Length: 359
Image 1 (cartoon, rainbow, N blue to C red):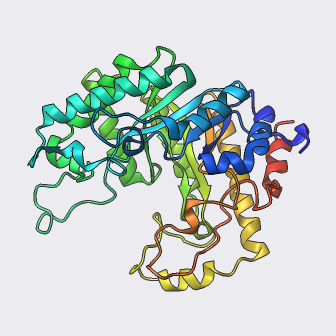
Image 2 (image 1 turned 30 degrees about the horizontal axis):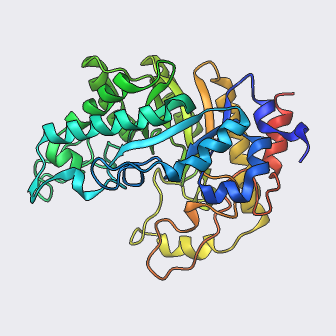
């Protein structure tokens, strides 16, 4: 592929262009990654369970192909999600056959952060320290007594309250390389009520003196984007003194017709109709996805003074988590076509438009 259509080179003066990768993706898309991207994120290989499946026994082998490629490319990586409510081993929450005390969980987070940093520090420019710790909705006080209106009712939260978030940021600040940025990462980050929760979480950390360098705006678009709210959100986060990374960008087929704020789920009104509609890939829908990308990149460029990187959650349409996400058991796979490159690694029309816009 000619260098003239390299997104990474075209956007060097604006922000990094990244992709979430796995060893599988690297094997399939090495040349595309080297040509089009200048930042990598490990999709799953640096999360808690793969890196410390048993307490004190660390395994970094899964991430090594990603580190090796980054070194070949002369770049560093975004290290993703050491503290997350998913992909955390059950032993984290136990002390023998009893629930673990908060202090024990904080010690484990500290030991895990130390081990990660000792191994990966030379290759990392940013850490998603804590991932998705805010909730999506207000809990019913009758059905869910005692649950926080801000924080996800995860195992971490049940055992520690919000202390685990502070512990994670303090540990990473202690061990991370001085030039690596520390991020809080979340989705639906432009939906006003969810955004308010994220702001509350980060302000709480700031008031406690924790170092939080930035916000990871995931930008999974599963509904028609509200471009004004995206701009408003960038401004709100930037006014908190945060750097901004777009960390998990993709555009679901739902973004071509779902007028709500959140993705449709099984059981929601309209979900069955969505399945029928989404199964029909049409030139019009594919063109709409390209159109959304062009508009989003216009916004990202206009805020390039506070945005440092834009990462798509995947490399090309041949493999994307969205094809399998949120469906009823037995539902047919829905090809979502959510990325910048098609199933044959060819750039979609939006790629050339995005490059032409900065020439």
